[in-house]
Image (cartoon, one colour):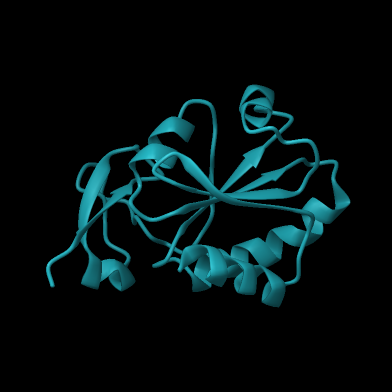
Length: 145
């Protein structure tokens, strides 16, 4: 099987074509040469949100958070661990709601942390509140299949 997956570079926003069977290799951007799938969540902003949410073939899991939110800070390392372990199944991004209030309003964020999973710009699922790692990965398993 020779399936191609389109991955948006988190560094330069170039759309890269990666063979599905090579996703585990991480790949490098054809434009800026940075790693595409490094197992880390990237920052989502007004400048890059549209490109990432619409152009990635992998689902994008977005953590809407705020720096003053205690549960958000406790959840951050759990989200990071999921980003590392599920890097070939989904992209992981963070959106700081205080820095990007227009985006938070567009997606109807009323409390933080809130997770939304997008595929090609469409919302697939939403979960509010912090979770432990097992609950997060269980929820993502149901959404990503």
